[in-house]
Length: 84
Image 1 (tube, rainbow, N blue to C red):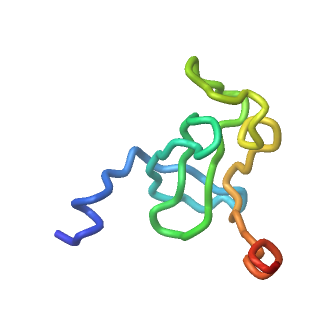
Image 2 (cartoon, rainbow, N blue to C red):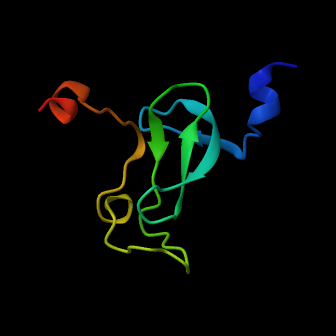
């Protein structure tokens, strides 16, 4: 048993936009708290909440609801984001 198997228990599988299947786990959005799924086998592929707004959502206008990423690779341009 690997360390990953002990720390993360996959909740299921989802298809990305290209039709490939991924083992996924769920985590809360940092801004509103609603759950999103992320791929365990390919870094950066996520499925955000979209229209699924939880009862205890902190911000229904959060990007994960308004412009959700669904089965796409989420990329940050660190050079632009972290340069002064």
